[in-house]
Image 1 (cartoon, rainbow, N blue to C red):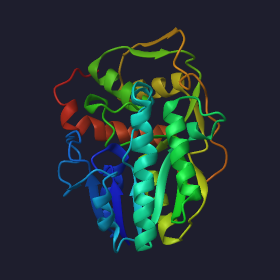
Image 2 (image 1 turned 30 degrees about the vertical axis):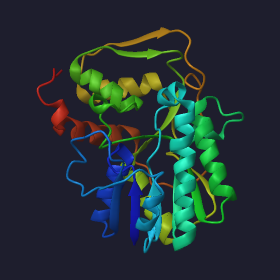
Image 3 (image 1 turned 90 degrees about the vertical axis):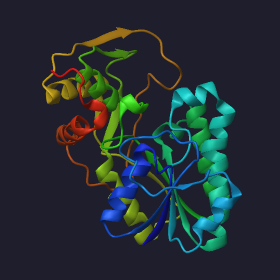
Length: 291
């Protein structure tokens, strides 16, 4: 298949480019001109253009699909700049939908399980929901993926990634306490990124368009148990602190992932072990305190 991946310098976008190319697909990796440099994605032959730039539409010509991983990925970032989050998560999506309609491509729009709540609990979830709405009302073919907590290779806290398991692992490698504010038993459905990417290819190859699908492992894990698993996997003596306290709206809830796209998800302990092995080899991990 011929694909375009936006947000290709980011965590999921980079991993999607790598694994899809390994599977034999032709991929154009796209990132914004001012994107942060990350060690893992340095080898990709990027096309540097903003996903909201009308000029990006010409890149969609001849593509079977666009995988749109560009956007505002951080709830904290969306709280700081709600209008910017709407532009990044909904405005760019509309721009790409216009291109997909013109050239006959499909769009995969990665949303969040947070966006399924009524009302959306925070500006991040609201911006994602607005992107979903654009996909539903636009005539272009599009499928919405409400994703759970994705983690794995490419997600590096030292480079700004905000995922829970990435943060737990970085602090354990650094020998610093892991702090879980709020309810430490709130749950997340953790899905390894290498189990997500084949499902993306299947959606395009099977032309599963105009659907809203939840993508998750189906296993909800309390944050405290995920932290304990990371510490055990690293063989670390890092402490885990649970100070309680109030959190921003949307942060202290558990999210019911429910039924959705069938994903062949590996067990969490196996996934964490694979991620830790990758992270230990990452340049940012070298020379740091080891347990």
